[in-house]
Amino acid sequence: MTLIQQEFLEKIEKHKGIIFKISKMYMDHKDDRDDLFQEIIGQVWKAYPDFEGQSEFSTWLYRIALNIAIVFLKSEKKRGFITNEDFSNYKVIQDDYDDEKEEKLADMYKAIHQLNPIDKAFIFYYLEDFSGKEIAEQMGISEGNVRVKMNRAKNKLKDILSSNNY
Image (cartoon, rainbow, N blue to C red; front, side, top):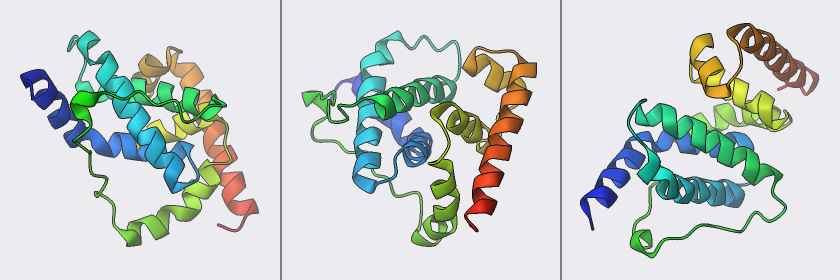
């Protein structure tokens, strides 16, 4: 394994929670979540040579992972994965979440799945405690627009939660 591969795997291992959360927000079924998780890792590996370190790796990963999730969700062909033989023997383990947490979050995720992809992104940023300025930078919109869209997304989520007795 090369030094670059090792560095990449260490960063992915450290930040796999980001990928796991995004996969969970955008995909209903476990197999689809696992597919999206692997798709994100493959695409991030492909883009990794372009990472210049001008931002934190986690910030860069958020942006790429959300974009991949939106495209993956819209794609009719969900099984077109990027594979790389160099990583075929390595798997990032998704073990940060216990069953009890999963049960508590299940209803929230059911509601989130009913949102459109952009509202999901806003809810994700909100849950990750991003500031309005950070969200504006990530989404390429003004902070004022972030506040409006964030409030709308949160209200939609509240409406879904209450109307479904979650």
